Image (tube, rainbow, N blue to C red; front, top):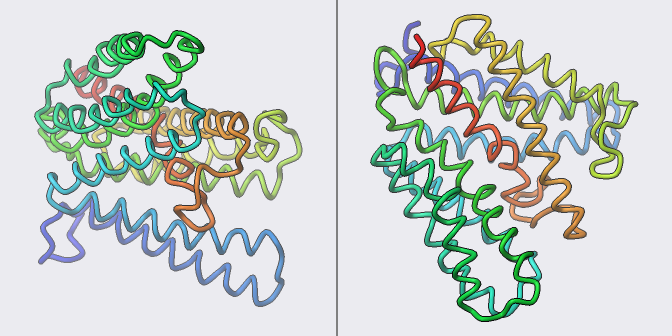
Length: 318
């Protein structure tokens, strides 16, 4: 596959996927604008708002995939910081819990440093093993035991959602096995982001057009079996045609892309349940039309780690 722009220092596959993303966004923007002029409706208005938000999100992730890796790591670390801040702004924490939040935020630079250095084992165990013990013990040191079990559960879970999962995006970039023998970590990063976002779009579109049977009526009434199944199948097909970004064969692409769709749905459903518990529609208003940062990266927080480890297993097994 030839480069589109020879002056840009990116492998041809990454240049092509960036061009494809831009083409899709231009077509979608034009289509929904014309549709809105001919036949205005609430659905068209919602799609126009979402398209503007997709421009913002895609621009951010494309930028992260083409700049110097250090800048990408800093950007992803800042993204984890924003997600934690959104979660903590909605929590009804005890006064004594707030002193422990510093150590939760401190886990961000440590986790991303481990990813940057490629310390694979330490990266994997730092949050789910060490922080899972350290955070509860710090809460014990405050001396306040009333409702302590609630906070012991909430804070480590927030680290898993806001830091651990997302940090796997950073691990893709510099990890040796992801950047050798014709494999590109940045290409894999773009593939994951593209497929995850495509799944969100496909499940939304199929659900809006054909959705009748609720899949989680008490948690997220807008999610339907038609949207879920249509999204999984569509994402598997899209993943197959985006396979030039990966070292996978046809059946691996289909299975992996379908798995991303399922894990993405799980992440969206988990966050829907969390927001219902908080009593809010969106985590915040950081992104017009899409709510908060975590509203947009909820799927990535649950697709990034399974994707990384499935790719890693496939590469090692080859």
